[in-house]
Amino acid sequence: MDYTVMKVSLHNTNRRSGVTLIEMLVVVAIMMFMLAIAAPMFHPDQDNQVARDTARALNAYIQEARAKAIATGRPCGVAFIPFENFPSASVLAQQVECPPLYTGESYTSKVTVSGSATTPSLSFNDASANWTKSGNLIRLGGRGVWYEMTSATACKLQSGDTTRPDTEFRPWTTGNWTTTYEIQAAPVAQAKSYLQSIGMAEPLKVVRGSAIDLYYSKVGNTTLNNSTTYPIIVMFTPTGELGVCYGLATSGRGGRTGATASTPSDKIHILCGQWDRALTAYAPEDGKRNHQTFDSYWIVIDPSTGISTIEQNIPN
Image (cartoon, rainbow, N blue to C red; front, side, top):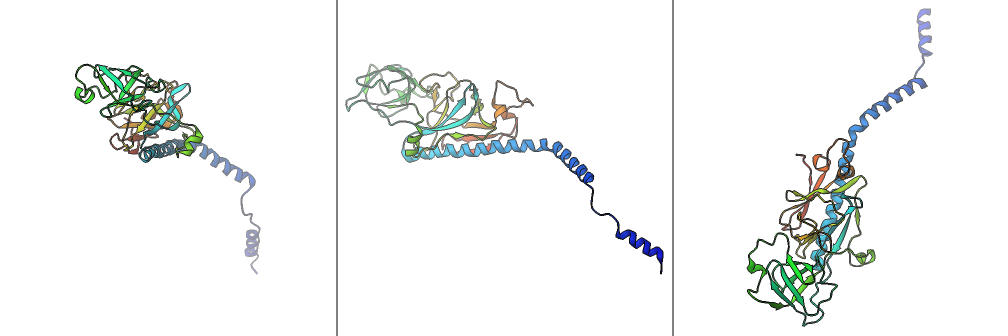
């Protein structure tokens, strides 16, 4: 018998298999170290997902308000509420609606119009003071454009309407004109129970870590540069297109809603991005704002149709 071969065979039978505890701990430590290094690489994807989810939810919320305006025959929209001490950002959107038109206290209610076609004077025979307030809209004679009331006795053309021919605004040529009127109150958000009873949605809170950037949102190519605590309000008409909006005009603010009323003719771009990049009072770590990164999204509203789409931001 070959004893040499038998010795080798016995040695192989007793050979140790597996790994020791120390070896396993070393492998785990190496894996944790590599994961710690790789983790920051996944952060941009997370930021992108947060902004995208916010854009999708907000776009659906806006289109729900548009559908409500079509269904009820009454202007409805969405108010973007600036965040307390940081008005450049919003984390809350609220659906709003306009009350029914006010035509006076009786069938004999009239208004006497005089003065300039762009800034006429008004004299009501029996109108309630609750309706003849600054910021409300008024239409004369049941036709023509809507004027913005600046007081109980005066009104003015809205932004964007001042270049139209006088004949579109002023049915009278000289003297005074006594006619009927319609007053549209500024849009308001109703109590939660009322919202539910008429089918309006509850307020929408954006995804944690994201924000609606009210500073770099824009109308056409003009940024809002919002720095006030008044809501930015986008309204839709009963036919679905964009109606009178508030806070989108860049020239001055005033009136009941705290913002100039206007009817946009350009597309509205609502910017959804990261919370820390929306705060103009603080600088992001990398110095980039929401409109300068790929992790942001635009909700683009067409003024002629009121239909909105989502587009990813392409930094300039």
